[in-house]
Length: 322
Image 1 (cartoon, rainbow, N blue to C red):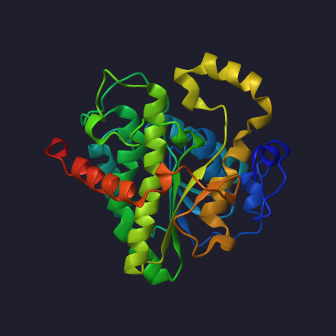
Image 2: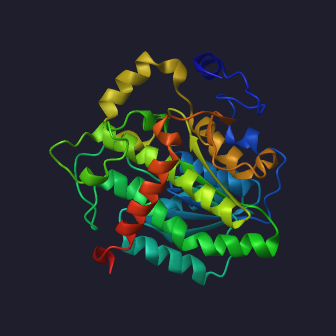
């Protein structure tokens, strides 16, 4: 695995590679007994992930901030697959209040929960704080998903116990996790505007996605829960994430054209990790191009992962959210 395999699309040990699509990696899989939540499922690779899971007969809940876009996404999936089971619920990951409301709304549906795909994200934003007073990229990409996962975890455990089917949690990270602040996670300076870098703040939030997955995996293994947790890098895909740096990214894409994927390829690793039977029991791993990959030294730091867990718990239980 490496740049050569990325450019050529040559499959890795899994049998899949950078050229594989979401449909290809899920071919022949029957997910009719599974319910999945996909955050940010209204567009981009989130929409393709939702479409591919629905194609394999999973019941998919699209969690999205923009309900109009989410309903359009649902409509587009149903146009191609009239038997698809798709529901839409509002979720703004930048708001802990919204995350809690989403969790309550989902639980009220009295559905099982087999798969949670923490896909939504923002990138390279100008400095701003969330309504909870947290730097917005860290708030949306990490804290929102951290809280959502915690709120739905008992539902997932119950589902896995009753159904006897392994639950899977997938965090979408990025190769950008290697480009973070010197400390890795700046616990004491999360909201520091003077030293804010939109690129490094994004990298920090993507590092947090991996550390969250690793620590949650460790905790679930410790208690014997039948749930795996993984993180993935989907690849370089031109989506709405680039709205804050479109011109720069277009120049970058011209210079690195052989490294970019289309949307079906971008959703492949997520769908592979969420559904493929080969990964039964595989947890706490980072995947790139549908194959295990070693992330950065920071991402493998167990002490840092525990620190982040405690720090995140304090934030989500802060009086600001009451």
